[in-house]
Length: 357
Image (cartoon, rainbow, N blue to C red):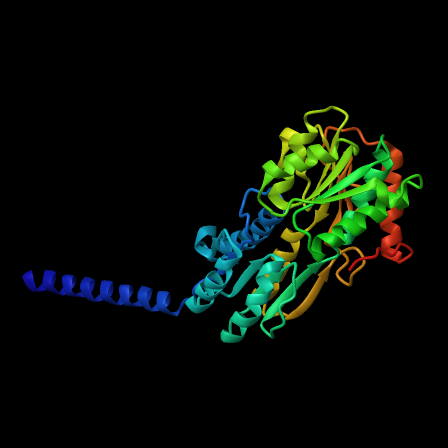
């Protein structure tokens, strides 16, 4: 009897051993799920615009990977929020040297110069940079036709202004924001033939994360303009706060429907430019994971090979891919929407050429 029990125990022990060995072998052979690194632009999360969109797009990609690999999104995505440009190189090298990220996403034009150097030191690491060009064979540089969303916002401002004066508040006095200012100005003048360039105020905050000064500057602009377009990251949240102080003031957001992302200001935000950073980031991450990563410049916008990436959120109906419904509480006259449809068609077919540096 004892020998019988002994044989049973030995058989169970051997079975358990081989089962554990099989499970361990399978675990060792199973590839680790893809990982994504995200280095945000200075200003960090909470701008309800550019940085947040970059994070949303990356997070969506991470969630899809997590679902397939039965992991959590936080196991797939690691991100950092630099507080100064000086921190970029350290974070880029830290992520790259870890040798565990399938793709590293670098957000913002000011990451590009140092990324060109860092990418050369890690030739097997793939990178994406948003809003700038880093010339390296392992970097995909994602650009947008910013002037298109700005032009459409200018059209809305030119059609809806009651004083005949509008303005744009930029974050920094740099070429990227110059393109926004150019597009906005041209759009306003195209839609409102009674306006001239001097009727479009252009001011710069000098920072992406200073809403207090953004409000102070907006109050000065509102002394003559009745609509201000914000293109200053977290700083132009001050525009919305300034607009709330007078019922005759309106504001325009940028990159995402800010009447949706900031519902407390939906009563003054008449429209928002759309720059689908979330779509572009997610697309490029997915391409990398599918093995179709392509370095070089990849352009998003209405008048591009891809054909998507810019537009405007306005009114309460989705008109087409480029004119989307907004959560704004401001009633938009039908003629404004019709003018925007005309503008989109003109941009698509090339009859409207928007000047940009």
